[in-house]
Image (cartoon, rainbow, N blue to C red):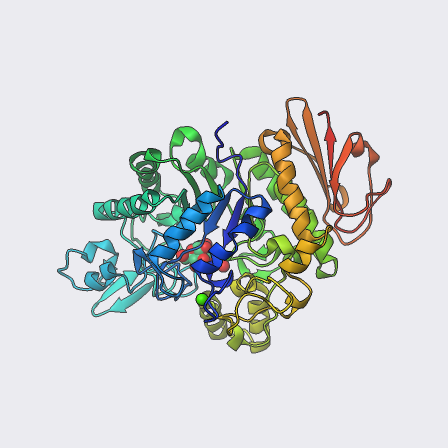
Length: 529
Ligand code: TEU
Ligand code: CA
């Protein structure tokens, strides 16, 4: 049977931090090729490759200066073609990041666009006066060149494309075809639900993202996505996942119901916001119930979820939603949940070995543009230095971007890594875990295998059963096969309700006993065949 997007497990590679082969401290494409056997060994089907396009790297490749070229730091077009070929040999598919809300300010289009009479002027959004919109990275969404202002929803080095201009549709379609023709399997579409600005009026004043109502989830966005699907994607065998900020289940469905012919699935943020107050810089204690409620709501209401607990913008799950003291158990518990839930599971590099947040000691050790922008902004509004640093430690995206921990000395590079390697690579690394039967890594591999063995884990309905005392219990049922998944989301023992265990124990992250669930214990039972 031909596989569909429902069958896949996706592994996200952040090229800069994955594997360096020429000792410049920066991960590269040859490095990825050298680890393809490892990726295959995990049992995943699809690799999502964060941007490798030409870029001045203000935002690590999410600022693209040429969509048809490879960033020399990462290698050459030949390397990229070899990567696609080597992946294909192993029956691995590659999806690329498609960043089409904005380009780099060093893109040729933008450089030409600065001239008022240029035919590229309308590729971007220029005005004589800025409106009151604010950017995702803090501060005003406009910057000035000459006498004109241009819109940028992210860093000032990331000017927004003008999707009111039909030329942009044409350009982007060409970019997509270029890569699909090379054998790329599809795209992860960056901030896709804000690409269409329906008006440039002043927005209603908000604590964050003033202007939101004029660019979030506009009708124009749906029209764009339908055209990309019908005029390009549908001509190939593809897979698409949209990154959609602030979506509701209804808005997600409007993008993914098959009859909409837009995207296959979308990443939502609601579950990742359950430990935040208003925005990610202000954190509150993680409450499992809040999280379970959001997850269950999305499971119940959304046609097909793109499930993730980590990516290059978030923090490490064991450091964030669990207790590092129970790192091994909690990492496996989250693996059980992630792969047990209905939807396509996404695993971010390092998650499969239970990597932790970075061990940054000083602002000078950070690299992320967002971290620096927000740090400055926090200073401006009078947040004291110590607290500001603490906020960065907790929420910086660099936490998830530290180099992959291949062995006890790091194994990522012989040079000085572009971002500090975690010291705990001495004890948390791939090599060690490959050799240990009961490692987090081998647990992920088993869970991925189980998802291929039991249809209920892919096609089964989701049913919420209980969250009493923060133990999340849910069932997945397909025909006569029923799986019960039990996750203790606390660092305490919990009484185990034996009625959940009528079937056969398929996997557990510790030695399962009759009456007690240990801290972060997870179990999966099969009822039926
Ligand atoms: O992220 C969009 C996005 O919503 C994030 O910027 C989010 O607001 C932020 O990370 C919260 O910390 C995508 C990419 O995943 C991100 O890496 C890029 O920086 C951003 O778009 C701009 O392209
Ligand atoms: Ca390198």
